[in-house]
Each structure stands twice: as C-alpha cells, then as structure tokens.
Length: 207
Image 1: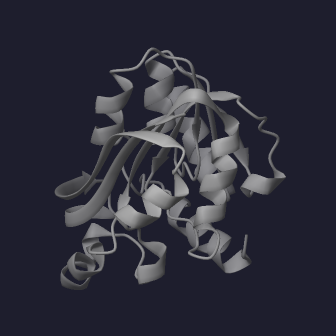
Image 2: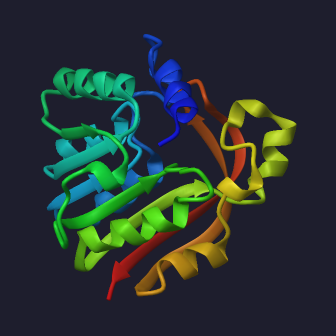
C-alpha cells in the first residue's frame, strides 16, 4: 500500500479520541444479531469498534488494517471491553488468511484505493466459506454531493473510490443478494462521520 495512504490513516488514528467513535456501526449490529456467531473478518478495521462489538457477541474475530496506530487503538478498546481480537497490520496480500477460513466478512466503510478495491473484494471472497455472509456498508457514488455540502459527513472525495450498485453486483456476482440497496442515512459516528450521506448496504450469501 502506498506510503501516503498509510501516513494519512496513522495520523488520523494517532489522536487520543476515536476518529469514528467506540460504538459499532448500526447496520453491522443489526446484521450480526441475526447470525449465529462463528469466525468473522474485518478488513480495513481502523480503531476496532466493529471488531470489538463482534467479539462481545461471541464471534472469533480477525481484523486487519494498514495503520499501526489503528491497531494500537483497537487493542486498547478490546482490552477495555475485556475481549480478544486477532488484529494484523499490513496489506491483504501479505497476510496469512486461508481459503474458506471465515463464516462472515464485514466491510464497514472499507474504502480501498479505487484501482485495487475490486481486486480486494475478489481476494476476500476466497477466504469466505460457501454459505458464508458478507455484510457491507459504504458510501455510494451519489455521496459526493452530500460531501460537497458538508465535509463532516466524511468519505472519499474522489468518485472512483465510492461504490455503485452495479460494482457490488459485479464484485459479488457469486452471491445470493439478501439485501442490496442505496439509502440516505444520518451518521453520528465519532468525529468524521457526522451528517447525512448516501450509502450502499449489501448482505450477501456466498453460493
């Protein structure tokens, strides 16, 4: 991963305050509460709020990010909540996940650089068992208009890093679509997700 990208996230997560808060994402919480706990992977997990919640629900949690500062905060949050998470630092191709290892993968605002985001989705697919579940929430391409009106809502400023329904259908073509929708929601997650924005929500079961 490019150094400037890593530096951006290390700087954001180095602050004492949690950039996106300590509480899990609402959509993730709703979805996990409907599933029997198993093994779950959180890509681009930042400061660990979602991973820690899953661990509290009885999941065996793996997570990764490129930011060592994010890892520090995540392990601090896990310790505070008396749970354990396996949190690695590095880009996906350098990590040691195995084929069919996970029962679920949660992509919560996992906005990878535009030129590799589909490739990462395809790689992650290998690590999910057949019948496994993907839970996805991230900003849609229409979000760019909300970001122009209010930067506090957060999200990438380049259109190519945002998602369309068509991209999700292509990247996850071998899934049964349980949920696939674009929605306008109000975010109140820490310092950097505040306000109204446009998101894509996807839940899929691997065929």
